[in-house]
Length: 229
Image (tube, rainbow, N blue to C red):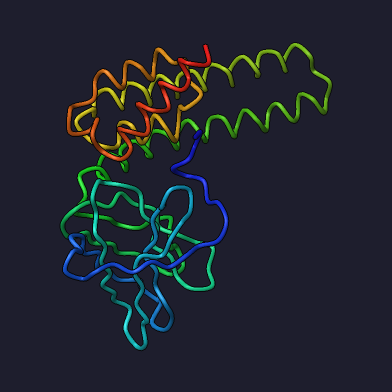
């Protein structure tokens, strides 16, 4: 079950949804993209499925729909491209503004409370990743130059950054335990953390979040871990 919510397994299928039951509207604009197909995707069990699509021909605006039972991660993709905009989908209207040149990197997403928190989390998480990348470069150079003492020091710094990132993610999840982003981060970012950390997140979650898709997955995942101890 590890990373089940972020892993792409197998082929991508297309599923349709009765328009009367569609409670999420995703509208937006992709500057520089006026001819092609835009897809809306989500995870169904362990497989990414296309839930809606629209063909653009002379316009760069789009409107897509889906039925959201519980807030979850969606992908906005364009045909014949590996790039994607990943966002938290939930009931209501969500607006996405992007540019073909920077598609998936500098998109503006509004309308989702969970996405607002996700943006905040990613901003800090990116800083941790950048620090780690800098240290990995130093580690490579230390190995190349056979600087044993320096290598040990760098590895210690890398471990400390990982620890700080885990603690930041856990604290962020606990502080936002009234939202579905809490169990999502636990499952996608720190699934291999000490079970006590995951247990703290679960105990902090509101009843609504416990009953959400990611909430149920986290509770089940934690129960499975405890059985293996």
